[in-house]
Length: 298
Ligand code: NAP
Image: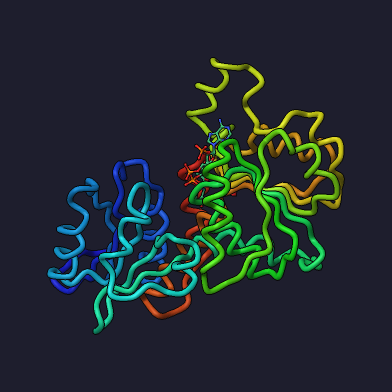
């Protein structure tokens, strides 16, 4: 990749952004394709988001990703937001058009990619989602896209759970979900076909913090919780480091199909790059770049 006067800019805005694995993935794909682009980290404080977005338009940036804490805050700064991103309530990908900045959400496509390769009757698959934060919203939208008709969201804060349930009522997609406090988990879990962890429990380096506070808190579930699951269950952890997490190891111990968050990360990036460069992207190159960064065998 050679940066020259004609090189087009892409990037990721976040605070912090130094830890982002996206530059490695995207620049590997750009180098592989031999196209005249570069993907950069843009460290942007929340108070400077509007200035940064206007500045990126002024210098002709083609598009950018958003990570914590900007995925919701960006919405009022955009000319258009896709119906999917409106439903999710978060934008992770923005691209420039003659109408201005347009925002969409590729986390949903990223979440779905490893599931679509499994031959399932999603309509009759019971889904249980642990956590009700930002990522859980992309998971709900994804499950709805699969056609799932039974979605249970389990969380620790009743006010947030109620707000989560209500937030789907006036969106372009209707969602058949119910919310449950953590205490109802044993009632909700039997016959789960897809169990998704969207909490950060078990994630490195937080895992160290949980371990110190409570040696058993390396997974959102106990071993006993898993006994009602079986080899038909898909256990999906959005966390990608460590790999596998304790949660996935517990799932594997009962014979379940285990999916970690690395493929979601690859696929949301691939979907974003495809929007920006309007041509097929080398997903395997992006996967290898990510796995190399994560120290995973490819
Ligand atoms: P978030 O908005 O902060 O949501 C986290 C959720 O987990 C909240 O519902 C939170 O509950 C709950 N939670 C946190 N700690 C908990 C605990 N100790 N016990 C029970 N519940 C707890 O975060 P997010 O953006 O959704 O991200 C969540 C995870 O998904 C992170 O690990 C992130 O790395 C991962 N993720 C992965 C990808 C990928 O591409 N693979 C993409 C996005 C996110 P409260 O609201 O009550 O705090």
